Length: 104
Image 1 (cartoon, rainbow, N blue to C red):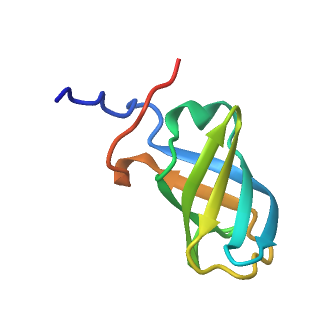
Image 2 (cartoon, rainbow, N blue to C red):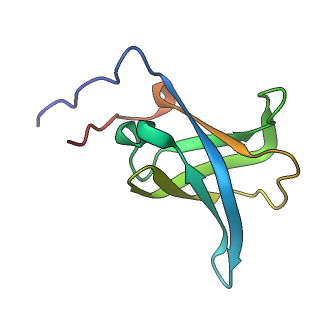
């Protein structure tokens, strides 16, 4: 088995803005994220957390899992988050993921 390359040292966290949220019947909520150019560091299955826009603190029950990454956007499923309030930002800590991927 070949070892995956380590995460780039310069960027250990990816910040995304929540652009919309909707509820699908039977499957729960879905978050649309704008992650900019940093999506090249992301892959489905990576985990993150919704943070307060002003303090940067994680929101209770704010855990999310990336389901799809395309271009500068990502789709995420929250673990239990129902309301966002003013929390419109998601942070994905690359150090806590199992592996980073590089797409060309």
